[in-house]
Image (cartoon, rainbow, N blue to C red; front, side, top):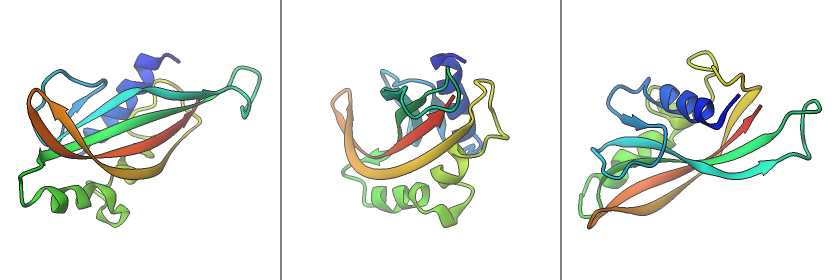
Amino acid sequence: MSMTEIRTDLATRAAVDTTLQTYDRAPSTIITPCFYVGLPEEVDYVHTYGPTGSTLTFKCTVVVASVESDQAITQLDLYIDPQRGSKAMKVLLENLTVSNTAGMGWTEVVSAEFVVVTFGTVDYMAVEFEVRVNV
């Protein structure tokens, strides 16, 4: 298991939604809509399964459109609502059958938060997902 494998697995799962550009790390420029995996925010060595296991927390972000877009919030709703299946990040990222080269024990999308992210000089509407991964 490596951090690169975990990020690649998460990006591959998000790519099941073929309308998304996916990146295994934060890109310098984007084409919307897109998904990218941030660096691990937390590594928990205490609550483990076995002597070498750990739980890592990543922020995964979906960016849809400029903040000036009338449709940005509506577009983001598709990725947040778990009833939407084909676009819902909770459904896509928790699916271990799509890609699991890192040997993750489980993946859990814990929360989602609307945010504004900036690329270049443009502000975009986005949603950040807190994703916990057990390895």
